[in-house]
Amino acid sequence: MRGNSRRDVTVGLGLMALMFSGIFAAQMAFANGDHEPVEATFQTTGTIVLKQALRGGDFMLLEDVTPLQVVGGHVAMKVPCNGKGETPLQVLVGSASESGSALTAVELEFIEDISSPGRDCVYHADLDVDHIKGDLLAESGKEVNITDIALANSAKRRVQFGVDNGNTVTVNLLTAPSEDDHHDDE
Image (cartoon, rainbow, N blue to C red; front, side, top):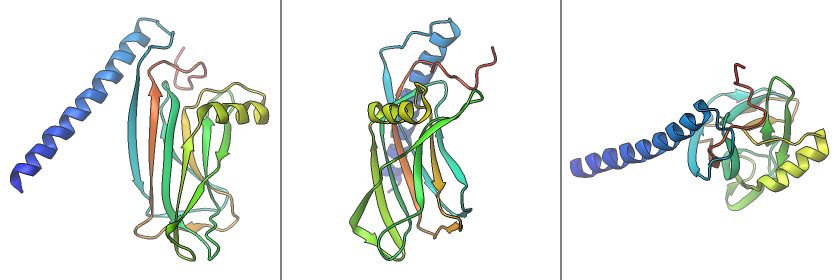
């Protein structure tokens, strides 16, 4: 058991070093004023245990990858649902910026065989960035780089999360700054 623990820590540290080296290379390119897309992508996965409630009409940010851009990914979540396997929760994808936000809901697929309608259901969605950008252009009239992913409650009533509710977001990132970088100090 102890040997496996050390191996797991070593593997984890190695993966973190790889991720940080990719981020460092991207930051060096940005610092040098190179705003051309770098021919590199990397993947990151985040898991959030949903412990609290989400008020009706409210949202929580799951990912903000600014100044990088999402070029693909996947969202999976286990959340409260009604007896028909429906949830008022939506995954919103797009860009939230000082110059104006543009977000659109992605279609969630209900995973019946591992869901318990009336209690908790599992949903997932692939992030087809070209399709999402097309939806955002049609809805907002803006061309948008994908930098933000949020979980929103479209109902008027709050959603109370259970002890085993959570989500996982995996995104493929382009190591280049977005045109609409809302963290830019210039």
